Amino acid sequence: MKDLQLVIGNKNYSSWSLAPWLLLKMYDVDFDEVQVALYQDNTAEKLGPHSPSLKVPALRHKDDVTVWDSLSICEYLSEELLLGAGWPTGAKRRATARSVCAEMHSEFALLRREWPMNCSASVRMKPSRELRDEIARIDAIWSCCRRRYGENGTYLFGRFSIADCFMAPMALAFESYGAELSGDARAYMEALLDNPFVQSWKRQGQQEERSAGVALRSVG
Image (tube, rainbow, N blue to C red; front, top):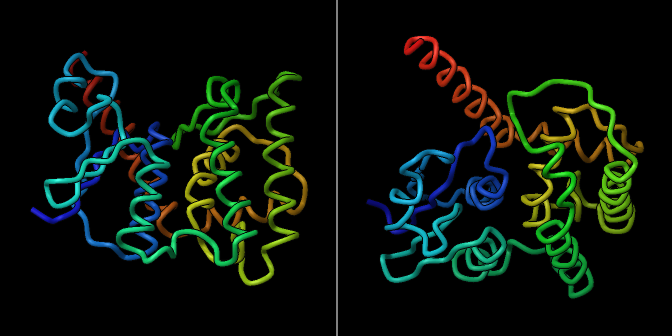
């Protein structure tokens, strides 16, 4: 067993699990991946030994530290294992990156409800006026950060950071449902979708759904 364990849910749906998983992969941190299927009768029982909140994600480090909640996990990883490299350099960039992560973490409830991350979905959906407002806000965040701070790379603040970890699930959702974005926002979304680890997560999520479908047909 490795010193670091990340407990995650179904890759097809668990958007919060993707953020710390992507951070670990991008910085080549060795860890054990523990996957617990969500929405099952025994999900809480299986999460009990790993997560005080009985939710995913959860991080265990050297058997004496447990961190839950995706943003807290990313903060801990950056501080303890990445020497602060999870955030952009410079106080202004870090403050902005933390602000957009906090907003993504606490807002956009309608978007998550109506357009949840689903790696296997591919359908054109017309958003309601309220949903368009939330999409427009994310478009503004992506476009403004790219214009102000993205000069040294293709990600939100140039080089990859925790901010991108929190935007990756939204990029997958926007791709699934056909979101209409401005040019700057679409270019950023495509950069995230081209990330090899995001692609790997998406493929594994799709395989989960195919496997689940085969199992259901077998039972039927």
